[in-house]
Length: 467
Ligand SMILES: Cc1cc2nc3c(=O)[nH]c(=O)nc-3n(C[C@H](O)[C@H](O)[C@H](O)COP(=O)(O)OP(=O)(O)OC[C@H]3O[C@@H](n4cnc5c(N)ncnc54)[C@H](O)[C@@H]3O)c2cc1C
Image (cartoon, rainbow, N blue to C red):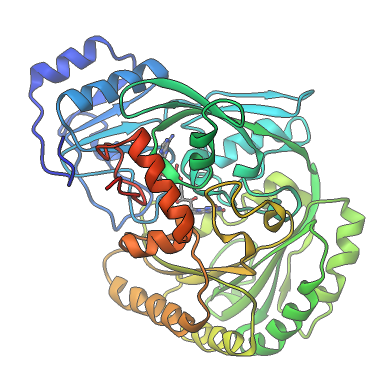
């Protein structure tokens, strides 16, 4: 087994053998579809796998796993391909691409959903909202449910219903030794603890079972914009106002140059703006009342916070994060927004250069913080806010300057860092992964890794090394 990701060559006859027991597509370099399927969401990642196995079901995942073991291949597992550091692709090895596994079965009476590993957030919303239900998950439609869930899963309704993992009832999973097992509170409970935050370290999840909740179909939601020059005043008000808001309210602060989108007036495009984006996971009239003080604050330049279908709100950020651009992220959690942090935000907000660079600052708390710290592998339950500082460019041109902006912003916040959300990490080394879990949970995850994946077969992830 090549532990460090060495090149492994694949001969044609071996691939033909796999083809005989594989229902999906097998794509090699130079073949039709290779260029499309080798690429991931982050355009700055440019890797060339030796084989892409597009799985249609559990049998394909098992066959691909056995094949990789037999031929000692480096393996990358892909759900939606949205990993910031591009962990779902590799050079020379095998990509086990779960993208074709799109099954979703909602049980409206039990309020549950069975969801296969290739499903994207928008697809799950579509099925669940048909019945007025939602699985708490992320805020951009084409993010993979799989990778998002395995890291924790934050989104618009988490303060009311918890993280995605807090609504996970069970998983089906293929382990490194090629077994197919179930994990839940009742079966393989240790593994179930680990997959709720521990990422893809323990195996390939082929199916998730979620608890759903009634939301919508209409919610009070959307962004209110102010010019960045008003940031100091707006942020101070926000900090005090949000401190005792109900769990139904979730907010994300955005800082960027106003994008050229149909919803934004032409005269605003390109100006530095601060947005507070809201979503009220409760009755619309109640939401209208709760957000009123924010709407009345200072001189907003645009107010798009209004009743709308929940699925429309879920798609709000889609246009801001298209596939193929160059993305770089620095992230950290903080306890609270103290005056110093607000000043740092005001300063770095003004310094944004690229029209696609920006901050998303997530309000945490509510139901997320009421699940016990040790109940799942996810660590940031007591975080007040989570920073996602994203320095982006359309291509390689200017990328370094954007990365520097993100790194500098993050470094200025360093005195206040607490934890970091594992799904917002780049490839930053073992110490950062340990920070994401805290020392005690990290040791427990290591022990679990030794049990379920002692050779580190699944290592293209925020890796928890077994040794
Ligand atoms: C535009 C954008 C928006 C985002 N919004 C949110 C958000 O709202 N909330 C949030 O919590 N996070 C968010 N994230 C972060 C996101 O959760 C992670 O990037 C996550 O890894 C994406 O999952 P994926 O399946 O698309 O990724 P992939 O790149 O396919 O996989 C990411 C990691 O998970 C592993 N993996 C994927 N599928 C499986 C599987 N079935 N079994 C085992 N391992 C697997 C991969 O091997 C890889 O290590 C966002 C990211 C982006 C780029």
